[in-house]
Length: 214
Ligand code: 2DT
Ligand code: MG
Picture 1 (cartoon, helix red, strand yellow):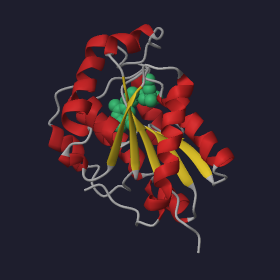
Picture 2 (cartoon, helix red, strand yellow):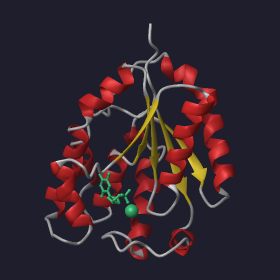
Picture 3 (tube, protein in one colour):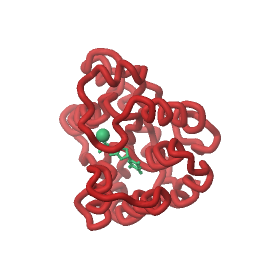
């Protein structure tokens, strides 16, 4: 019988190195563990919904904050079947941002937290979440923000606060395992820590069913 794939998620504010670590863990799972692996990212800007989101992020259009929130959520719902198919066929997925980004960025704008979370309920649940964190000042120093809509120090601080006070390891993030990773270190040191966490946990996780966000 094929063992199911794992749903591994990376979360955190902008500029903490999520994309680099997604790539590193994806390489580790396929080259060292020799397991089927695919990386995904949200928003998925390639779909029609993703293109609307992309235009907003690039400041080409404006939109009501709640309408935008629902589009980000829809962009995950439209990926639900393919995520489940990959996992059930034994492919591990390593994902750059998901529902927690959705909640953190929208709640940081002042939208009610529970309202933000409600439309995520029922989506496939990540098995393991790596939350990358460092001070907002250090993240800003890592290079110029690219000029996308949310890349401003004050707003980044608010998002970090929502993650750390309301999402990471909180009861409303429902029994998913969060691993808090100090991201202000050399890339290899971080990726070695993450790979060894994966190696020590993946067999256990494989034998449990795929969950749903609740
Ligand atoms: P990247 O910088 O990772 O490309 O993300 N965002 C993301 C939301 O506001 N809601 C969501 O549901 C998701 C997945 C985070 C682009 C920006 O989009 C934000 C940064
Ligand atoms: Mg960004």
